[in-house]
Length: 205
Image (cartoon, rainbow, N blue to C red; front, side, top):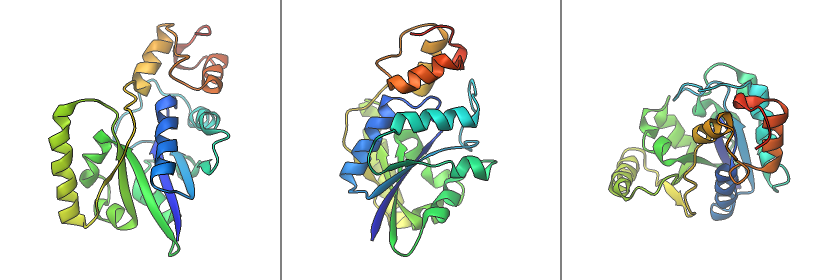
């Protein structure tokens, strides 16, 4: 049984937290392969300060370059329209495959609201990673995981790692403001952003 991970998102831009989460996901879920999948149009949120899908795909390739077992896929971009996770899971599923889906806390807490949620739980094992340090969320998470187990018969697992509290949104704001982001994103991604003047960048930071 091949263990395959799926890590989707807008990746605008991909940052060090994404890379750290992917590595922890690979290690802790004993994955044989991990597909990192930039969305064409995310169904759960509006694209702020959008860059082209081609730019997001290329930045994601650069961010995960050289990590063994990680493949950046353009399947959702090629599919076009709203990127529903269930369609990606169907495309990657197989009798000899076990799929694991990684998401952040916010997405995990709303999994039952996703398009064809029951099918998502049937096709994969959801896994989440904390992106925040808010202890008030602990009981909310525990309650929601219990609900999922009762309703769908699947335990949602947690990746153990230190939260990367800076978001892509905050990084975009820093870039536009001319603040340094060298400690937040891979150097290759930073070079691409400033070489192509993305997110309002005007000079290297």
